[in-house]
Structures are given as structure tokens and as C-alpha cells.
Length: 361
Figure 1 (cartoon, one colour):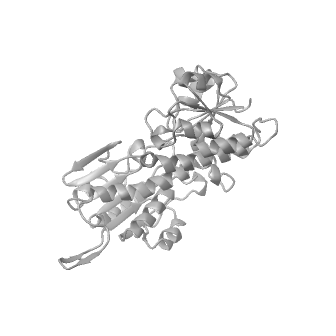
Figure 2: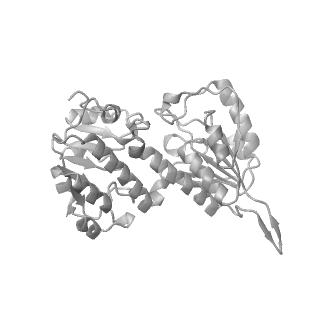
Figure 3: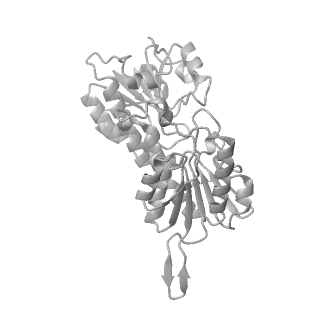
């Protein structure tokens, strides 16, 4: 069975790295890698060849693959070149792209969406959302520190003392917790907010202060995503965030609701009250943003406040991000093709949760 690895069009990461090629080969898979697929993540073609992969052009990889793996979905014209019995593995995001399931079904293709893998104990080692969120949370603090016109840690010098920066994290999921840990390592005073009461213990274990707003709706079945809140709660939440934001040097926002526009946690009125030179990093910008003024993939300055909208900060650390992503893919394929005949088990909970087309095939 041949696994095809595609070079990403607008991302420096690669879905499978050379060390995973070797492990996949031990399970009976062959890997065909598009020329230059890993070069932007510092995995040259030679490294893939040394581990047993073959290198080919894009069209050949697509046409000859039994499993076609990519981080981002390819265009439909490319998918039309696939074998009819191929399994497509990618971040199809069907909750956001309402047409993708229908389009792939019409082509008769079987597609497994990585962002639909159940966020369960069984699937932890396959959870690309958590892996990439962890990288993004770490990078968000480093990006903010590059923009912030002052130190993050407290500094005591002969010329005087500098107070530590205050950092506010909105959303204490995987990305938020990694942002907290990174900010604390750099010496910041950190506060964090989340609608889930269970996050309090995790936040405090990292040395940050947990901000509580009573009355939040919780849903343990939301797969790590936030859930829609009442208008009354949102009003009280915004008031509390504004009070904290006025003193914050950096705000990192991470809150997303699957299938819906990201909730506005930092309205323009709050930005207007923030200090000159302060920074907002919005990790939810691709789904509308938690900051009302965010622009996806842009850094803007609004009356002295810097606002960075970027939902793909994992792509800025392509080597380690690719390594983690590749490990997730290996664990996924090892699990779903565990049978000797290398056929998908329709009763498997991972397959049931992530397969978005030809579910009953």
C-alpha cells in the first residue's frame, strides 16, 4: 500500500517526515514523496530516500497513492487525478467548509478529516489539533515578545528596575496552557480565563491566576472547543476582560466554537482602553477572531495597540511542527490499518468519527 506525501502550497510544514517513513515501512507501507515536500521544514529529499521513500513529481504522487496525506486539502482538480479507492487524509474542516463533504463524495473519494478525530484518550497520540495548538501557544508568546516594546521579566539594573510584563490568556485549552507555561518561563505575571471550571486547576498548576466569571455553560462533549454562552454571561465576561486588559501588556486569545464564528472577547472598546505599545495575538483569527479588530494573517496597529491575527503559528516552527504532525499520522495509520488485510474497520471509533465521506462503504 502506497502512501503519498504532498508538498504544501502555502505552508512550510510537511505531513510525514523521514523518520516516520522508516516506521511506516516496517508496517508494510511504501511512501512516495513529492519532490521538495520537506525542504521548507529542513527535511531534504535525500533524507527521505535514505529512509526508503521514493521521490516523484506531484502528478505521479497523486495518481499512484493508495493513501494521500497532506496538512491542508488539495484543490478538487488534483483530487480528480486520484485512484477511486484512495483514502484522503487531511484537515478538511467540514464544520467550516460546508461543501467539502459533498464535493469529495461526488468524486467518489473516501476522506478522513484529521480535525474530526475524536478527542479521546484512545486518540491522544493521533490528535493533530492538540499537537499544533501546543506549538501555536508557545509561539504566540514569542511573537508577542518580539513586538512588545519592553521586557517581559522583571529587571533590576544599576540604571533602575523594570516591572515584569502582565500577560492575559483568554482560553485555557492546549494552546492557552502552553502560552501560560511559556509566559511564566519568561518571567511574566500571568492571568487566564476560560469558561470551563476544570481549567482552573490546570491554570493554577502553571503558576497563573485563574479569572472566574460565574454562570458559564459547559459541555464536556465539545471536544476541547468552547460552547456558545448566554448574552448575560458574555456581557459580564467582556466587562471582566476589559478590566484586566487595561493593565495587560500582552493578550493572547485562543477561543473557538466549532462550526461557528469565534466569539468576540476583546471588542474595539476594550482595545481603546489598552496601553500604548501593548500587544494582542489572536489565534482564532481564521474563524473571525476573538478581537473585533483582528485581521487574519496580518499585523496591524490600532491607536498604538498591536494586533496580530494568525491561526497558523505552528507553521512558523515547521521542523518540530512537522515532527509532531508526522508522529500523529503514523499513530493514526498504525491504528486504523492494524488488520493484516490493511482494510479500514467501519466499527472503529476513530474511523467513525473522522471519516467524512463514504461512511458506509
